Amino acid sequence: MLNIVLFGPPGAGKGTQSVHLVESYGLIHLSTGDIFRANIKGNTELGQMAQSYMDKGQLVPDDVTIRMLESEVNKHPEAKGFIFDGFPRTTAQAEALDVFLDARSTPVTCMLALEVEEAELKARLLARAETSGRPDDSNPTVIQKRIDVYNAETAPVAGHYALQGKFTGIDGIGTIEEILDRLKVAIAH
Ligand code: AMP
Image 1: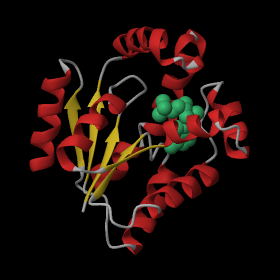
Image 2 (image 1 turned 90 degrees about the vertical axis):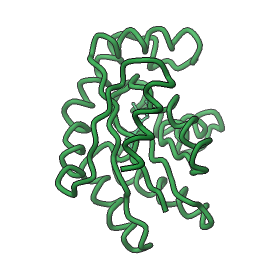
Image 3 (image 1 turned 60 degrees about the vertical axis):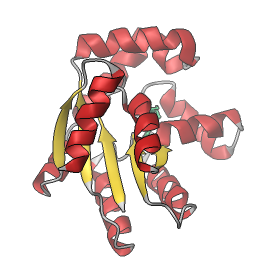
Image 4 (image 1 turned 45 degrees about the vertical axis):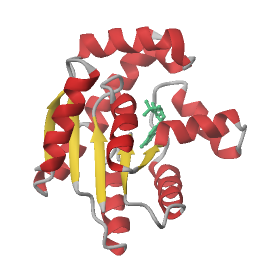
């Protein structure tokens, strides 16, 4: 099993790189943001609840998010591995993921953290808003809130994996191909 936590702030390129990593390694891509957005589109109870947080740039509560992620993993018993994109976003989520994957004897292989400076993130998110249709990309106040939440609540998750010797920082500036090559080098190590 190859279980990759693809990490980084909003706009770092996690979704873009996930598509390429799926192609290269045949992994299942689980993006908690995508799953929440699909639930909003489908007007489910989960979607309605998640939307109230997402619209403000806040995190959806851990218990709901963890339960949802675990049920998504359980849908793929034949998977060769997973790319976790946008999860874990809190230390509590990281700890829950460890317990859950350890019970399946398929622990996280590595955390690959895409590193991009804040001014570039903001520019990318505003540019993405033109095509993504995501309300949380088009509002500078919400973008700032997402970055602040990342710095306060999510960035510490890197330390969780560093302690396990699983953390690798990846320069997230460059062409899609250049960044993909850096990720592949890190995966091969
Ligand atoms: P993303 O698509 O990863 O940028 O996520 C969009 C929004 O979905 C975030 O701003 C959060 O409101 C919510 N979200 C996605 N993943 C998580 C998570 N692991 N924990 C809590 N909230 C999340």
